[in-house]
Image (cartoon, rainbow, N blue to C red; front, side, top):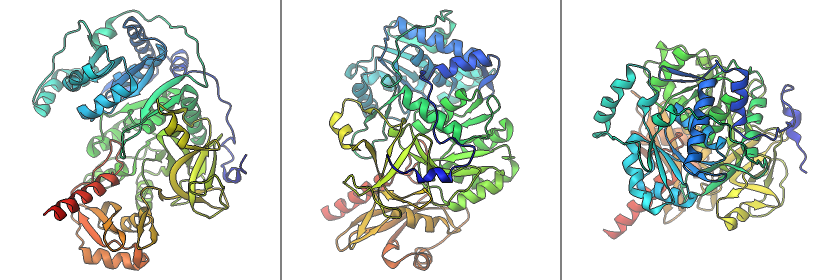
Length: 563
């Protein structure tokens, strides 16, 4: 056992540990239905579903999966943006005893084929526009049935009539699928009356709820095995941390995609657990998000720094009222201080940084929302969670203030990687899950990430943490977004390069940025190169892809050498 010094820094309202009920994730939906059947569960582009409608739809989906031969432990892939069908299918798959495989709708054929083959999914639910892509890879997978749905299926009249024309104009084609054979239409499934409860054995510790694939920014993505216990634990930790939230009264803005574990836990599960309302948007668009906040008055807004930056820099920001927002947990990337302060000033709510990984369901640390927080810190370990700093590559626990690898234990830590026992074993040391992040802990138990172990730049023998350089650049008035990477250098080994997106109407030169950085950073940390871009490569949740930029640099250098 580690000494949990952070408990002394906890707000008095947050319990040090939480009793975990041994229930499956879908029991939260059953409880919401029994408690508040007529309460609105989902708002989607003007259409609303009550908890009764959501529960009954999920049972219909579960029974239909059973009729297709889905048994306990079988994998069901969901390849949808945030929409009611994604919620129905998620809970329906679990009612059927299946394991959800969340699948990014932006996947290429190669990425989709790999994930379906690796997971062994038997059924896939796809958006109509993605049906042709799914059909091309079926013969290389174990998929037996394809369920098709469209955004229009849950749009109110007359949007449902207009949308197919918008979609055809946008994509240049439309898809028509018949409900027959191995093809199934979601709308037809929902017309079926069978809503039997499905009884089955349940193992809280070991039964998988989810196979969540890691981003795969390096190498092939791995399927992270998350159990019902993992997801129940992390959801209840989140609920305890947000102690001012009231059951049945919160509205959560669901822009973070459900195919990312952070959006899934903090919106898809937490909202149902709290018996609140989730307001869904299929993708992040700053103007649409501002209009939705103004109209729907969400109280909670889990997001990523790029989302908050996008809203703050929208030219029509002043037209919209964002004062309904009480709390935001920011994840997936470092939260710049300037963004935090501006967003809080604008909304009157609180925006704090949290930390976690796909392998931890995902959250392990967060700053207190309404109490003492430390800017630049990822905060305190959550209830039931232990954390230490280990000497890199060893199991020696380092003292306060020393930089090493952050390691965690807790009920939210994954069971392991799907079909990869060797890689699972390499990720644990003496029971500690190794995060791959470098950081330290202060004397009050607040943790700090200095960088990814893999992202640290070693230039001329000096260790440089990109995050430190990025924090300085974010404070410059002309910088909207930035990322710093180590690129190959024949003399220094690596050297520092900054990729920058400027704010609209602002300008700055390399020379000016160089002078600015030299005032705020040691000489060896100052970027040697600056590249200005219209946009930066990102994941679906807005995490900037540093590896993509490094690969681009390597390709450029290889071409130069070849010429």
